[in-house]
Length: 116
Length: 114
Image 1: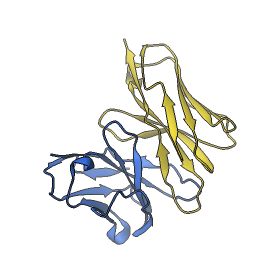
Image 2: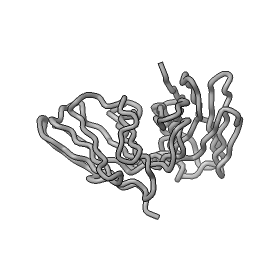
Image 3: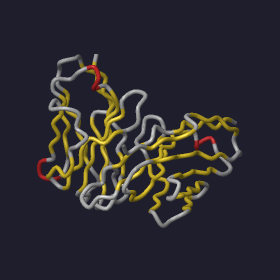
């Protein structure tokens, strides 16, 4: 069974440009999460989808970040326009169920974003 | 404020030795505590998940303990191997009926030397 996949693995862009990250969850997992780790900090929650609906987007840093999950399958995270502080590793995770603390979340390998 | 703190920040041990990593949390209301292993360039992989009522859980050479009263957890690695070199992250989930949001510690970087 394929795990969570993310594309691209690395992205280097200039400040002000737009970048779109993609996540394909494990097939059948309704729950999809985005997390981010900036240099020297812990991994932090960004948002949680249940199918195509945003269940919790309390971790999204600002309106330059837009996450979508059309059709409830793969998800994209767009950063527009990118700023230097957006650099970090963006992880996607998926789980079968959530609620009450959630079920086991399976993580993708991450996308390393560098904004110059 | 919900927080997870880990110690030590980094650790070097010789192959075959045991080690224990610590985690303190202030997440409330508490749902469960997880330990993840993250190899360089990869995503975190779950080692153990413990709920409020569980004091200990093992996964091969990994044994996690939980004291919900003192809000402390530990991860004990027995007979370490070179492949155990990785970052070990303590993660706590707050109780909620509708979200699977996880709160991460900064991790302990373990290096196992031959």
